[in-house]
Length: 235
Image (cartoon, rainbow, N blue to C red):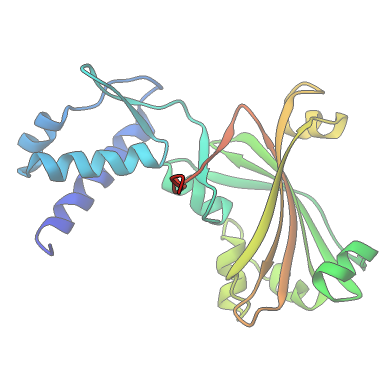
């Protein structure tokens, strides 16, 4: 297993680099060509490509080959990564534009979710390769404010929180389809009324304490969720 893992990773990383430089629907090497290029078995080559299929970076056409998928940021519903990590895994460059950062009294709903009276609010437009993907409003206990103030430019917020001892560990999210408001349209560069995927989630830290309440409003044409599931057979 140890001898296969480096080859497997080398194929995957090489293809990720190529994909980042290719247009959508561009063809990629066949499994046979990858076997010849990297000196691996067909199973190893196919497994590396399947990882990219799972991540939404490529798609297969039976009998024809493997192609670069349109640049749409998909996430598996059972896993939450920081936005920055999601985009980097797909060979895209993440960035953010801060719309608002302020401390204030918690609303009734925020007090119930975060169990605090004071909060800090961070609103950002999240971009991939310079294209707006989401409008994110994150609310934290006010005690976290110094950590947010010290976040290095371009650094993952999850990583910054974890380094300060607030490790995002588990949570629960709800999803809804909503129409873009005038503000959504202005900040995301979509038409008013365009479909949005709206995710609202509460994340707890390693001690089980509420850490972050976030609403993310994704441009529907630029973001999606992949769902892993089990099939229950009738008994």
